[in-house]
Length: 129
Image (cartoon, rainbow, N blue to C red; front, side):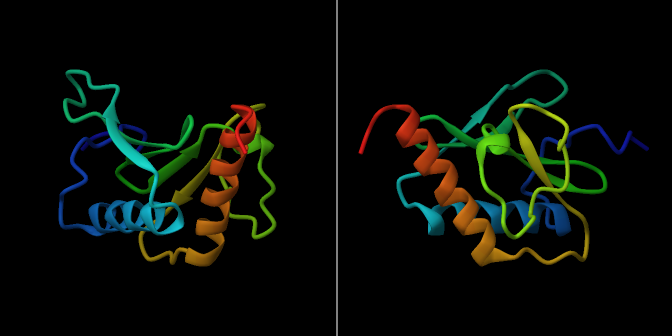
């Protein structure tokens, strides 16, 4: 058995992690159709890389682990989180994360609002309207 902290490369598996990551992928596009997804940070232990969603800068990454799916928001510490979605990496000065465990539901409306806020922050940081 692998460590629960070790990222799993394959989000195409038909287990709860793959389904959760596919749902997150859809929510990203629903929140902002201009979001671009790329697979980045490929390495021998993770040849597929991890999904990275961007719009005028990185919004979020998605990783599957043995016991959770992690969404790490690049500028999460600068985002308001009135629905308290962030539940991991709370001590950092820059990033914040959402860990989703098996059986947990996603507050989809709140997540889409958080994604939109991250996009707005990226656009503002780039000096765009």
